[in-house]
Image (cartoon, rainbow, N blue to C red; front, side, top):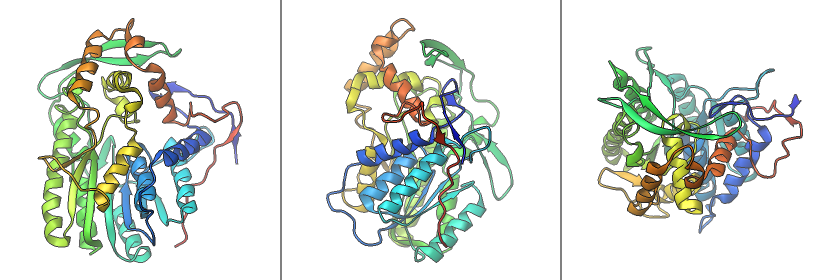
Length: 404
């Protein structure tokens, strides 16, 4: 097993390597931060399928589901193994750490690595539910953020884009140079053209979520009362032009329409529910790619400080609602809202004021830059408290296996 001293090497917010020990500690910290349930689940626990389980809110859903609901079941993600030149992706190491926690907790979780959009993966999951988990699925959490998707029926590959709709958008964004010096810069993004909207909806809308539910229903694997949630985001008016009103927003609207369609179907067939869960802001590998989101998130943290609700706390609340430990509360669009702490009038007014005042010269006084930069590094296992980054660490960590 190879050992190396790893230091962060990055191009903007994208890091070339990940730190296994840091990723492991980060998962352990999330596990400890997740609140304990009022009543510890007993017995085998409900069967859950989490698609996109290795990062961001999907990882939070996995850990919160383990602790709050005592889930067992199948976790699906798409990660790269270590090579001679590169470490594995951070999600690979986070998955290995999550598997260790599940084993210690006595929960039977199977971790699959592959293309969640493919029918091959859907068949593998269905077979496992049938053969290993008694032929009944209780919950499905859908948390997939991908740049492209190949339709299994047609073989067509769609690519998503981050563009406004109708006209170009000019917005502030936050960057750091190689020495970590912050810069607030204005960037312009041209409007969606040709089939950009359709392509983005095909990748990030509800088509694959619906396909998963249809596939499992076709195999008679949905238990009575089956519930499914797709994780989503609305965000601030400050980022709406590039996000909620842009191509990604069109995909989110399609996701929400899909939830209403699925909810009607599931109510009739298994007495079940389908919802979208609108989560609050967080630093994720996906969000840092969106113009303006980094600046907004840093300013938001500057306003709310320690009152910023971490993903694992938000997903604990979602699991409580899905399992009946708390009432399932939805808005007029059928969405569970976990972002209320972020979108209050006073918080948004304070962030908007800072946004207007934000320049390269003022940003250090307006945003929590130390927190934001550390959060970005922690996505890859760096800047995690308690880790000795001068020590060599084993990088060839195996993917969690299971006994058939």
